Amino acid sequence: MAFRAKYFLELKRRKGFAAMELKRQFWIALALNQTLPINVRLQFLIKLRASRNLSSVKLKNRCIVSNRAKSVIRYFQLSRIVFRNYAREGLLVGLRRASW
Image (tube, rainbow, N blue to C red):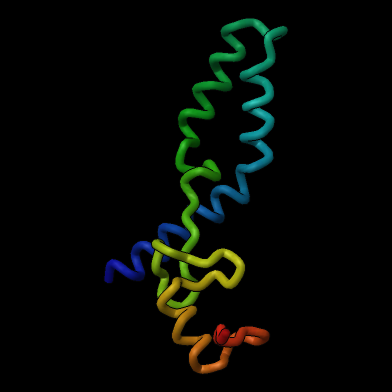
């Protein structure tokens, strides 16, 4: 059950981030603009605070097979355990065992 809950939470965060990315960048630019009055800048800071869960920092790289969050190899989007099993079975193209 926890597996599915974390998966759907991550999907929700990614969709929210994709939908709000441009707005957040716009709000950040206006909040940091020194030529605007302070009350206008504070309004944009409040909006940024409200949309804190939609920032890119909250996103987590997860394995696409096991949904494991730790030790994920970014290039393959696989956790080290799944990566090792796939490499052993020869399912990853262009990968060979090291021998010297």
